[in-house]
Amino acid sequence: MAGITPSQTVGPFFAPALTPGKDYAWHQPIGNDLITPDASGQRIRLEGRVFDGDGAPVNDSMIEIWQADAAGRYAHPADKQRPNAKFTGFGRVGTDAEGRFSFSTIKPGAVAGPDGKPQAPHILVAVFARGLPRHAYTRIYFSDEAGNSTDPILALVPPDRRGTLIAQREEKYGGLAYVFDIRLQGENETVFFDV
Amino acid sequence: MTLVYPRESLSAFSGHLAPEYKSSIKRAPSKPLIIAPHTLSELTGPVYGHETVQPGDADLTKQHKGEPLGERIIVHGRVLDEDGKPVANTLVEVWQANAAGRYVHVVDQHPAPLDPNFTGAGRTVTDAEGRYQFLTVKPGAYPWGNHDNAWRPAHIHLSLFGHSFLSRLVTQMYFPGDPLIPYDPIYRSIPEGSRERLMSSFDLDATVPNWALGYRFDIVLRGREQTPMGL
Image (cartoon, rainbow over the protein chains, first blue to last red):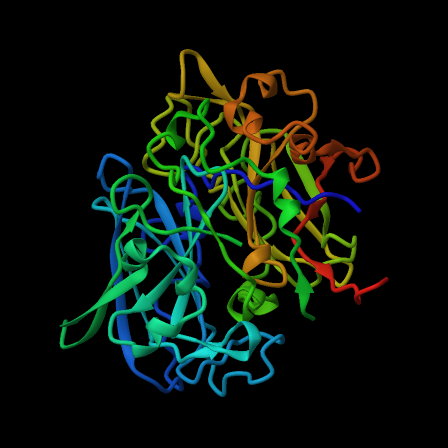
């Protein structure tokens, strides 16, 4: 069969099409506010910064997230327990001049893992940027989840690097926030997955 | 539908580091990637269909008062999985420079004219046979700072979703016969034998007389049907 089409970098000029916001005259069906009025669960803000190997902020990357709802259900036909709300679990945002990104979302529930063992609540992340010929996959876990210690995917990560996958809980903005910085390279480099 | 995603298919991709492409040097992850199984999280993904797209989104020549300058082209093709089966009802997003090689993005300072009639952004959804089509103008080549006298060949950026988070793809499509292609480190980052898949083909059958040239670009996303053991 035909081989797959290779990935190429998203480049520096994707914003007018993929993340136009208020800057460009183009409607935006995919954004960084995932919350639908009918979605139940803990509302959270997920925020962080993206840095390169020199520790400089990456101001032209795009972060996409994919997650289950508060009951651990994905809005996809392969998950037989579909969400009972309009919550899609997908979001996209571009980083700003300081490399910052943020999402408003619902804290996901635990989902099934390999061999029927549960996975701790987590969010999948794809990092796209100028300079990345293919996007980088990582995962966000939550600092206040006891299930992290038995998560089958975290268990694959050397213990001294697991911390790069844990978003830190902070109470701010009058609510609950989790802070997750992404270091593409160098000391404390974020763990990326080969999937 | 639940598919499997053979890891070896990814040998068609560049690694994260592509040294000739200077921006990758300080941005490519340098520590070993962690090989992880495909769980329900990876095997599901966003589903974007017709509700995402507004009428006219696939026609980049009619988003403003007048028509953009440049060579009018039709870009079409099919989106398939690794078994050659069509990927139906999936979102395809595109963006590109105008005919002079200039993006509307504020960071693009190439001294070529902006076209008030061209944004260079489009969106469509594949039909039941996996087909998509855009009407646009052929993008121009443009200079960039990677090395001395560096120019990007004419290209259109595409973004696709497919069946799961693992089939997500962002790529670029090139035009046949472009003399800049052999010099382009972004194109050359792809292993030989698979980089050719990024080349569109001129399509006389899709060319509309007295109107627009046709180019065909088929896309294969990750994912195959599960084969029962022993077959």
